[in-house]
Length: 240
Image (cartoon, rainbow, N blue to C red; front, top):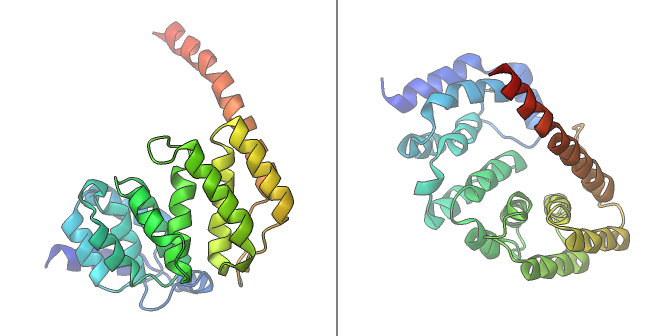
């Protein structure tokens, strides 16, 4: 039995009809097994970095196998050609975001985002903006001036962009707002100007978070965690 056949058999074993119904509501299409994220993590853990296996799983055409492929692929071996090849088969936001997370961990984040954000098609453009959301706090990827240009673009274009692109623009605004105080004030101004960003999540319980409250909660959480670190260090020192 080949490695890819063995992994596909594992995925099929743990798939459920209930998960298939849930994933279908999120846009995933057949063929799929209905594998939970917990099981994808368990199966994928020993396979991480196996780039050839990832490509073979992607070529199977099975939704769960493609989700697993994007989790185990090696970011260091990723090429722009491979990203565009995989993207050509993406037909739902679950795979678009998994691909975006992979690209964001590679050295291709800026190149791919720049190539995709302005495209009219929903999935490529949403991937481009999702990469912004994943990397906005990384000064090696985006300068402050870069992000200010993106804020202006979001403010001007958001209302006319496709459904899922609006959702990822919302996420990008949150991530940019977490970068620093000056950008945060600009993000709050954009938030006031565009109002609540409306996204149709279909027959799911998903919501697009309100920008300003989400940023404020995240900052409060980070501050709380930062305050707890000295106490944890003291406890470790006392126990040693």
